[in-house]
Image (cartoon, rainbow, N blue to C red; front, side, top):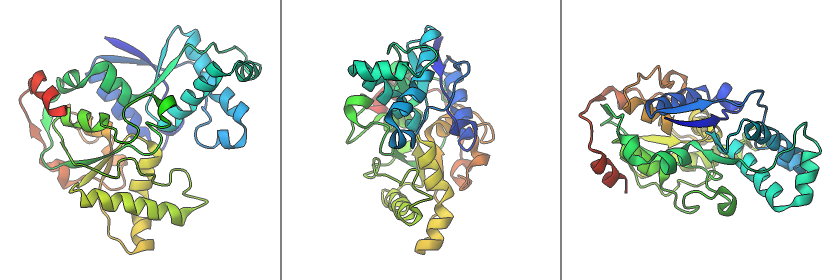
Length: 304
């Protein structure tokens, strides 16, 4: 059994609870134990660095220091905003002695820069591998054709993210292919959806969201897979707003990639958190059926 320190972050305790629950189901099925850091706190996420770089670094470093004191050297976090906060703090402190001293001066316990933060996608793709990912599959989803949407910060900036291709990432594509899902060739997989600008620049976010949804349909997809709570919120929750403001009629389900994996592992839609989605997959998953276990070699070949 593999074991990781797991930072769920603020959104996965609330609006993105389905992401958290489905990640836990997937990891359980793969024999991965998740341990939360005690007394973890907000990482600063999207806005903190724009207000105060030092305090933003300290917010992230406080959590990294807790993980370090646990004796763990890897922190798994599903949220790209949390991941970015941790990776930027780690990079800045490791490369700038003065900044490290300033940040540690704000902390109760210093951080010595020994923890590597990884996304759930990175752990699944690099540490576990598509062959192992295929093993728990029990259910086929023949009605799904998925557009994998990575968003703009999961793999960027490349020197700090240090995962997948920053221009054409393939990890989610190959993970979904490994569990038997039909994956569309999606050209907009890295385009920004507007992220956290939904309040100050709502019109801009609605236009960006509409472009992503439209391109997914043009790619022949009937579902979008995401790995980010903000992306999921904009693409799913705002569809009715997009339709009203721009005269569209989008009704495309936007699921966390882990929800799709959980379904292929035999969990029910309720267990996978699909009741929390605004645009439900409905008929797209109604045709799900049991499948024989796919040989590991075949799954690996399909995902490459």
